[in-house]
Length: 248
Image (cartoon, rainbow, N blue to C red):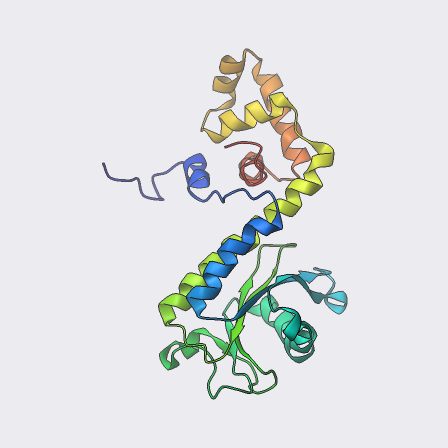
């Protein structure tokens, strides 16, 4: 049986197609990052997030996760000193991956014919070459995932694959933060039930009939859930409830 196209799917069906796996802690990200590191044939990785979003003068890159090891303990500071301001400016303007050649290498990572789709940083500043993949998720959650090493030589397909996986990693990290923040104002069972049915494509009248409530009460539950989830409409509330793990 053929799968429906994106144009014919309902909003709820499209939301279900883009759900991300729920993680319980940051340690759950490590196996995926190690797999990506191997795919890039790199020796290390790091996740940097932009703190102070919306306040350009106060923005800075904060390292959330890394595996450079004790022998490269100073690499993080060297990286932000060398490229931090450039990356902060870059993520406001572009989502192209960035690359640089380290002191040990002659060329930055990536095939020559892919260079129009990447931003080249100044070479030779750091010991190791690297790739930095920007991810922009809105007012919060913006940042970069880095892969560093000697003689990195990923194909164009590998670069595209890594960038896609970086987006999922950052979405999961943001989801984890949002779940922790939302714990103080959890949704009620009725709000969750109404959101679940709305996410399944049911209209208010159908939800009311299913739960034995009035349409007015259903809309009230959906409205309060939308407010608690800091969303502008029902569709956004459903998407956020999925991301936070309230509904499936």
